Image 1: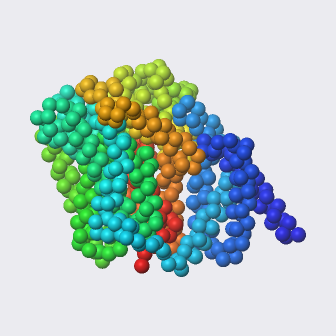
Image 2 (image 1 turned 90 degrees about the vertical axis):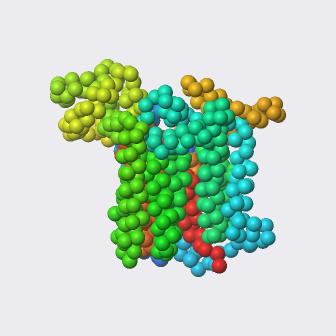
Length: 584
């Protein structure tokens, strides 16, 4: 009888899970009528295996698995109610509870099975045959061999897309370098300085397009160098996984596209990846060299994106506590680069007469929430003087016309938005925002979820990067398709289809899902906590702070470049989750 009851429970849970998956993750599933039986069968297998392991599962494991599963399940269920593309928001209902009942046990069971697999993995000696061919990649010069392979794989993209993937942000930096617009820190001035230096050094060539091509090639080489070091890190753990990582960087079309993408986010990603790997080295020892590397990449992280300072500031607090035996080195490794960064910013702002950054850049979320209320709700509960104040910032009638659930830019960059008034009255605006909060709390929540959707909901499609040169530019730079000019055919359409494919293909789109990148980091953190390996949490801390900083002030709901460091670290994250150990 007990056996029948258990089987009935597993059957009902599997049925609930299947319906829930089909409902809340339809984006990642095609031919849903065909795949439903497959999902049901998978659920039955997972529940059966988990039942057999339950006797040896600790309460700690169940607790950690349940917390992680609940977070992921909630993200799926809540995200299914929001369509940021079409500004559609529906309220959660009773059926959502049923979906959670189906999803939480299933994902918790999957995590528990992973835990049990890792327990077995501890006692397995890692393999990987190091033949003479593989020795080419695992020896001292291996990083150069790896880099050469990645470079060759990127050549078709380079020769098709020169002078690089250049969007609106890129051309704003170029306009600053050419003196056409005032310098600002909207795009970190250090990144603009790098472009300026290359333009000035290559000025004798007489071609801005050629200057930017040179910058693109240098930019690509920095990205390839970072990717090569990630590959070598994986090679050190397991040769076979190192080969998989090499294939990931060489064959996944997003990697060469971002290597050519002239945005501060890409170089920032390289700096943050190196910062994370430096923290990993620090975790294994306390050598002075490790602290010096950490200090260098902490400085670059701050110079290359504005939220880098927050990441390093958090490390400045945590590192001395995590490394009490070397607290002086830990303090110096963070406070010295912070001091240099502040000094650089102070001097450069003065010398270049940098304009103060608009308050709208850091107030994207409050702006979006107020805009949501003005565009979609009854405003009768807003005080008349507050309505007049908001109308002064931007006519409310205009807010209703341009408001977009997923993009603050449609609001704050509109011609009717009075940026000067907003900057001068930032405190008053925040006061209005706070006074509206009690009466419009549900609207604030829905606006926030819509504005951040792509960073926590798997089912959301992500914007990747500009393909080629942004046509609406005023410096007359055009794409140079070298392959088309020399061989008479172009790979541009093929590249376009590849980029669309990695966004839309079921399962493959997991790699380009910002939400899945974050969930993988959370899962890794859960594994560290389960193993009481709390020191390793410091290694993933910069990535968690990065995600939090995006959730605080993102201007758009799904900009892939914002979390690109997590994408670059996918192989390392997966390697850690799967428990791949050092060879030998």
